[in-house]
Length: 614
Image 1 (cartoon, rainbow, N blue to C red):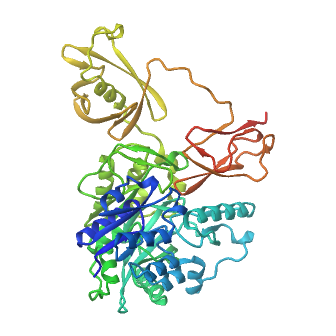
Image 2: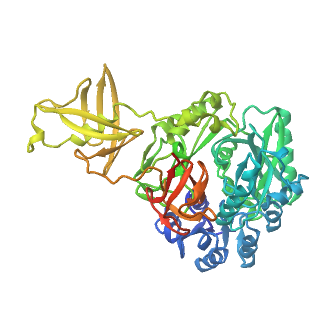
Image 3: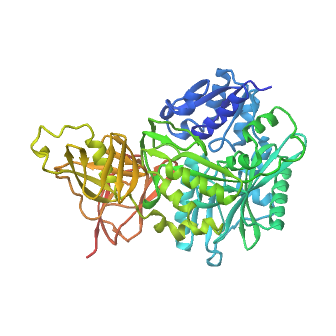
């Protein structure tokens, strides 16, 4: 009987495992890097052990330190979560070798499936050994790990070497393994997966299908169960293939078998020998706690007969601190407030006041809705996201809401190319036109209208805000009856709530302010000074860091004075476990190069200057 579990992970999955352990009466031990010293997972576990450093390679990827932490804290089992060492057979063996229970599949099963190349060979599929023009497009893919890291689509042979180098570097950083391979890229396919659960007594359950086709950078954004629109024949085939893959490696515990489906045919991708980020949709549909089942299996219990019956439909959205309109650039800063309606499930590793740093994945939370039908579940999730209070860095919330309400998604006609086709329309700013006025009225609440020349009652007060990339000026007056503005009737105004009557319709605006940043409902604004100071201007062609991160490399042989072409990658930044290329904005000459490998940069740091050819 397991009494204490060390969770060898961080963030929302660590919090989610801790929650189930506590429900089962099991004590928990967290591990944390220096960057995560005050993280939610470290605060909610019964005990926390420090892993010195911040980079994953120095902390969460150090299996020796984690085993030592488990022994020091008196844990008798280790749950790996997902990512980091969750699919590392050597770590699993080290855990078992220390006399601890491993809440995961046998190391031999991990070994057989951890390398996607070996997994394909096991399923009778050979990866591409040499890529020719006829093979294009192809996908360069990390042999270990997942989450979209170490993956690149290549459509021109000339781009293959660069894609291989970038994928190797990203995979080595994220997983400690730089092996990559290439495979045909299936255009317009759906990403379908099957959840499996197996015990030590020979029982393997196939717990339905999930559709994970809405992806950016090959990382899932919205997932649902069951996968809509599959024929009964194809569903049975997917279940059979998933069970076959599990039995082929004598699998134990929870795992996922992934496929691309196109033209009613299933193409095997890989088997993830761990719990998946999207497991809550399967839990909702089957009424299971998969973490609790993992623990029961690790304790030697048998699965109870046939799988439970699926009920209803579930949809999950991943809330990321990122800007989809600007190449999905990750965002950092203080998360002032995060609240979603109680009607949905919230899995998160953050709470109000936490800081979002540069070292790890930018996912803030997963929001899950379950309902009797797909249409009801989608409506519930879209509404919950729309009404969620998110005060902090830029997120993909608006993209999620628009995606869920898009006609293609409503009709279950999405595939992995959805964002390639629709990203511009999904990221076009649509701020509320009354948000600046609501922000100004909330700020004005309680302020005296006397004491300054610009506060003469007969003169309007003026405030300026940046919103949606544009500046907005609003005017209001202090009157004996309270605050007033042209074209609307101010029903109520205080620092947190403004109610306006617009053409007979009352509209409520919840307002939050943190320094110059103001949040009015789902609209974010920046209060601008009345008399802005002159600011330094960068020369045309200046390349500024779009995010905080680390310069990991500069293009080989690149020096000041070099000729460059528009779109040519000049250097690479790493932030939140992903690498981002900085390219030349025009054909011309590199007149300045300030970036050096290993350099830490903040948003707006001048990296290089390209002078365009006249």
